[in-house]
Length: 189
Ligand code: IMP
Ligand code: MG
Image (cartoon, rainbow, N blue to C red; front, top):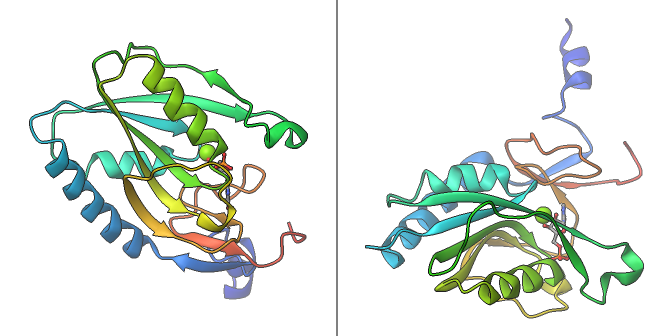
């Protein structure tokens, strides 16, 4: 196969993507977050809750950076159609299989954008009687916030651009990129 053909077929070297954070930068940040979390939860047995599907890759790297006894569960949330989105209505598509009462919960999310999803989810978990509920987010698109959400452990703040990779998708594409990128032209697919 010629080089030009290999380029054209490569998803990872897609010319419509501009790298924002390399795989190495992400890993370096996650290692530091893991150390901080391990220090803060020393002597505890936190339950990490990954938000499907976007946070799957982040949570799988983050939990291996936390040297503690811990548990891992998953939830899936969907927001209603964009017209009702500003009402903050979100729906649990996949709920937890375990009770969270008395547990120290660390929600792990890929990105906080408007904050609607997380403000709902964090309040919901608190109402179930968790001892504590904190949030670890890889990315913070702070300029777009509509609901105040406290991010206890943050990877990176980013500008208001649509990003993909490392779990984040554009119409289910690009979740498998090892790095985080901005789509240059969303019209090109
Ligand atoms: P929020 O409720 O507006 O904070 O929505 C957060 C969710 O929207 C995230 O969990 C992502 O699934 C999705 N999202 C927001 N911004 C982006 C982006 O730039 N790329 C991919 N997904 C995004
Ligand atoms: Mg998500």
